[in-house]
Length: 66
Length: 564
Image (cartoon, one colour):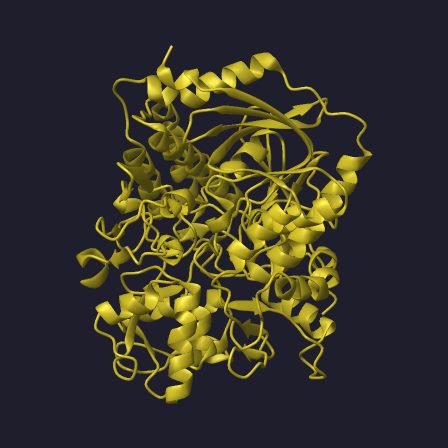
């Protein structure tokens, strides 16, 4: 389960990394990276802050198949 | 010396320090500034998006004096005394919630968040959780948290984000200050404060979760009892911490939604398609949360699972509102339900019982720092607010009660003529202790350590407990002590998680000790002693946990009295 950042859409503003309540997103080479995907809370704060629509969510089989 | 210890040391003095910049903390800050105190907010995340409502919130519980018999202060207090009996202190509730409610409602609107429906301009309320009438105001609180963060900036509160507070310090039995460190820079903070308000929520990640991922939780996984533990270590008493709270969540995703589903008229049904809650409570699907969880547990154990919420009978307009409000409370929930194949009109939605957590047994009280009518703890200068206190919880009380705590903390701070000193030697030792996991070449990963804690807690008191299960659970948790020194971090993020893991471990012991001191059952299954399944009048009150001379939890009992 995690937020996924589209590298092509990301403009490097850094708001996702600045605000993520779980400290899982960091900026690397000017792009937002979800470094700790297993620690994502799925709160959606990063997506709400992203002006470029670069964030989407993947739920994964552990959430969808159980 | 490790490179991590090359960070700067910052020394700050403030009148009031707020630890935890969630809903309660930001209301504390607003009030303390308004009272003329200098304010420092310290948050482990970033106050724009931290705490339980980081991604949004969809309801605010309140009485509104509309003329209905259930919509008064008296009816509300009667309700609190009924659903939170033995946990809520009504004298405190009146002061920290009722007296502050009108101003709290006005404050939400004043910072730019409307409590009214966009299309109709009306207040829309629903009834759940044993309420005598519809107390839950549905509103679009998607941006309530950022709006509050902007408001504290406007009021010139000082904020330090991404700082984890690790210990509180006293001087001559009164608050002197605290230490913390910055998880992005490695800098160390030494803060002297005349008053501190702890507003750091409850303890999550303490029990196994439904999918095995400890971050797939109902409440914010960043709330790990850091300041419950630190306050307790400094001599602050805790109360209501024996309760192990749970809710009903969608299978696969521990997201909020209970209030929206049942408030809009969703039906709780078992695997046979039968509605079952009337068997367990006269209010059926409108029963208090713990009773709903209890009912679900019994149905599953009786072989009538899985459990579902049936919304097929709802009118299209109500379904539309339901799915809209689900997305306000948890941004990603509607798309999760869609990804799972649930269509708005069609299928029943499979639900399950959430992970247990150390938290309040009712929406009408809290669990943690034991506070009085002025939100003060037993240690002069230390106050509690929001979910981190034993008498506040949920948005309505965090908004109202947070403000009360800020007023009282400021009043106290402004009466103090000087800051109390911090001991330089103690701070040097603390800095070394904090960064120690970074210096270990080999050791235990925080995930493994936390996982061990979760197995023990879940097996021994998550949620069903007995004297034997608790005593043997405490013995296992004590045996884990030696492994704390083996925790290893390879960067600052992991270091933060190491400290969280140790705090979860320490809080698990406190929860178990508090549970032993309540040989009855109350709010079952939140405190269900299988060896004492009945609720006893003599235990109508608080188990208060302190720290003994031997460093172990001590307990005492404080009765609570209710007129009705």
